[in-house]
Length: 392
Image (cartoon, rainbow, N blue to C red; front, side, top):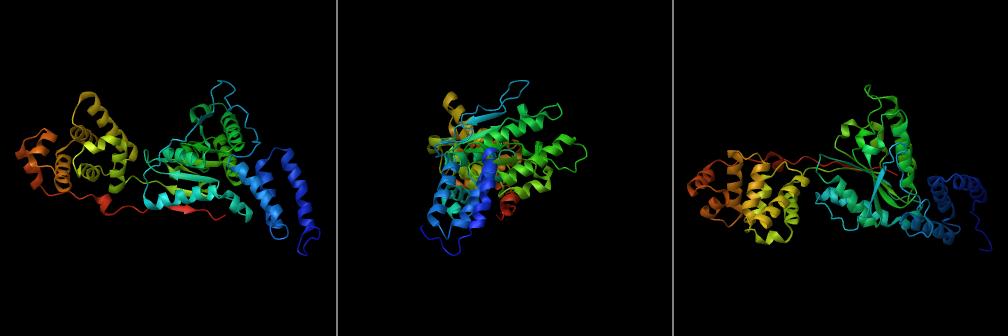
């Protein structure tokens, strides 16, 4: 390093020092990261060792392995009036991977892979994705996915407690939100903003007060400046309520659909755990066929309720599941017939055994088998899944 290369831009590097000091003294982590990223790009060719060392420092802080974590000893923020905690901190290392359709699962794995390759990206002057917007109906696995991402990245999950953060006092909600955001920015974590539409509504909604419009402006700024070391995940059941500018600020946007037949079977099998071995061949595929329209959460509840009844009341598991399915699907004649036909086609149950499951006579089961089979429109023509990644 005795002789600097001809293309070394001394003025450019010198200009970065005041910005770096200013951001450091102000505790502006994203500012420090921005200046450091610029320095890495400038130094990559003339001094690759220095650029690599800077990238490693940023990456170690982003993945939680830094010796010094800014604000890591700071207690979680609390509402100044009630004293209620504004965030919940969850250790998510045992989180289960949600069952997702292939395009969505692939996008999630890519997001995690890029986060885990932070050091490699920073050496090239690139930033890893820092924010993720999850959209979908209730029970499609948005919160579960946030838990699993935190587990894969080996960081804590920090969840905004919306009930504590929202206040009727003018200016208080914005203050609570800003303090929660500052806490999450200060250490490696996944920060989950559930029910995101409650704080990120359209600014042209005339029914909303001015404070919520100011909160949207705060969120827009936060998304642009979010630091590398943590991930911001927002989840909403009502994407149509979001301000249009919000979704464009996220690095990755994913829509989680209700599960299709193959995913429904996988969810049921996981929820039944070892008890699935007690079921006849083809039983769960048949149940998956007739539970079109149920969310993943509803399927888990259905299966776990049936397993508990089996264990506590010694009811045969298949019989317990049939009762739960018919209850969840409405229990009308069409659903009886649909489930009977599905069990007959996919399983190895005789008419007599099927009759015992439903508590019906064999002749009644035979009647259901002769009825025309209803067609599942959603499985025949699945809706397209929406995913996109923001250009960085």
